[in-house]
Image (cartoon, rainbow, N blue to C red; front, side, top):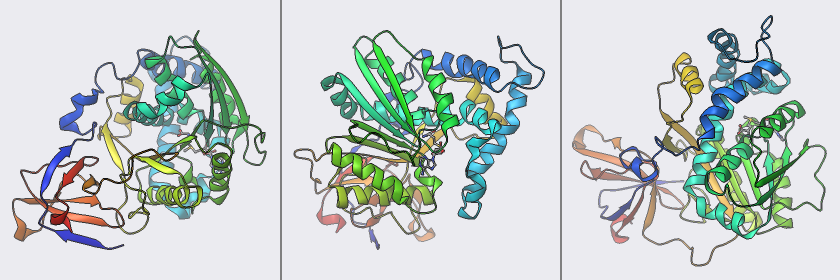
Length: 402
Ligand SMILES: C[S@@+](CC[C@H](N)C(=O)[O-])C[C@H]1O[C@@H](n2cnc3c(N)ncnc32)[C@H](O)[C@@H]1O
């Protein structure tokens, strides 16, 4: 991969990424973004369920979740969070393996990362609503494979998305959950029970990877959430499993999300390339092209961010204790599906892959940005007046960037 420099960039138009801070009013995550039930579910239902299922010794009062309970669970949350941040290095991967076999970590995940990851999924359903709406409007029964589901995080986020937009529509949902840990799936099934609604019928079948799903089952949607980063390299068993699902239903839609860390984002990029090259799938978002990802190796990686005004006192309390000040939720993702008509790359559209980066001394008053070119990335120098943010699309004069 080579980077090219160009100072000649001539931008005709900027299409702002809806979650860029200055533009955040486009999708206002402060008000009515998350459905009303969200806060109650994550701040009351879940903590009380955790307290009942994984009780602190000597405390039987399951009517309230007290500050002492918070302190009790916090130590496990801190430990888990350390595993997921500092221990991302592959040498420590083995240590992380099987964390869901410990009660402490199941409880911690459900209190903390379940909501963080559900918020990312929920936001992506909102941002790319039209792709999901097409399935919701055309199918009476939607079949969903949630692979590496954990406690059913992506499925829970999808139910909130349906609650927000399609509460009155009769929808039948058949979830197929696959995870190497049956205990966390059992927990997830109980948590889903609290989200049942009159118009949405829900069935969940659970599978471990060694016990393949019924070959007759076809899935309309596949969610893959934060599972590829559990393997050192791109997990061939997972890619083969997804490939067999694509063969059964080439019209399915895949939403894959991974943490915004270099190794996981680059693994995700390799998975993306595999789906294009070997499975003839089309990347609907966020890529503006179908070439190999220029960031599947090298020092940069592709990720996006959004301001996280998640309405949860519990989450705010946890973040404060973990000294996480960053309001931004960061992730790498793509949506893949069948090829769309008229959706080939528009020659002059580039996705901005970084917030403004300060330039070297001799280019005062200038910043630069990283663009997805495709085939390569392009580092372009901009005047300070030109403010582009990660995720924006810019349309520029083709000549000036070559
Ligand atoms: C970080 S959790 C993510 C859970 C959930 N998808 C989310 O986004 O919150 C990763 C999950 O993947 C599961 N997992 C890891 N390797 C797997 C594999 N090869 N096949 C199926 N599940 C796997 C783990 O047991 C765990 O539940």
